[in-house]
Image (cartoon, rainbow over the protein chains, first blue to last red):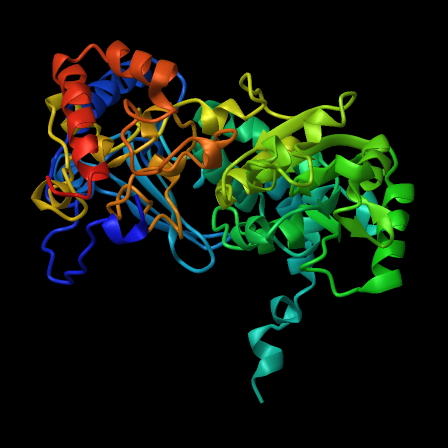
Length: 152
Length: 355
């Protein structure tokens, strides 16, 4: 068989991409998994994370999932090593977390089940650093300026 | 304090970078390596305590495709690895130094980090005629790998060539090319095959080495299970059509466009272990099967010599035993029937595409 035998034609109006418009059975399986995690966390269990990037979800699956989970009360953006977008779904405790890299392309997309997503919490080491740096504020000259000395 | 004496956490703190960056970085890597998300905080902790890792990259009989691929990594990016986590002390294509300076840098790095540096090798190593077919700085690749391996903590063989001989070892293998583990037997070796390997697999393996201080768990071909634990077929979005017995009959026919299974067009997905189906290529844009072409099995040993990329598994040398066993194990009557049909179809294709 030579290259010439491979039946290829280029058609730029070939219609929908193979990955679009078709739902797989994955969404149902995923919803079942989330239900289990929500139950666990509701009963005091540890935080759970479901990585969406590892699942064979079609684009249509993601859209369907977004529709079903909806958007709730909280929406947050974190600026650390590129932006991260977090929102709570209509189910409190079920968070949709999107990590972007510096070029703002999506690197990881996760569903996190717990009181708050881990990326929102400040790390103890960073809080220690704050505690060290904070007293420097006491030396701010503005703090010593009284209204009397400022007025002419 | 010298830069290499600081932990990565201290180094980044000096740049005003918070632990959130570590957490995010680890979350992204953990996700691609199927590391449970519950381990991410611990992974971030230990990565912050690690020190900058010396990496020595040796290039042998290779095409530079592996490093080209690595520079396209986006999660994490190669830049973030280089700026924050590793010290790439020797790499032909990327380093500024050349000639004697470059070779001196190699030996300096080996001396400074003896017993602790990580060797990455790409390309096969020729053994025939004392290895004269590939030399750098007057030394054969065979001498070179033995020399750098001696002081290495571990070796990562990048690409199908360094792992199994690859293209260089394709019949009739004129240079007697072999993979690294045919020569070095007393060091931990990890294979990251692929032609080229996936960029995120390379950076993911490096990160996990930094965070956990050891190479990840591997399969029988020394590949990291995190990325090579499933076949392409297991994770393929066209898989539901295989189960339904719906197959594309020629490239770009109606079925192919609808996303039907490419088995009959020669897809090697059922017996190829790699992460393409979920990690995808070019920042998650697409991957071969999504663009309509079957998997060619580039992360498997000797993929060049296993007959046509366009013969169904059931007809080629790939499938003679293992492939058919797997197709049967799928337990789908439609699939098994299709294997028979596909042989007929293949005969038609081979006979000049008159089907």
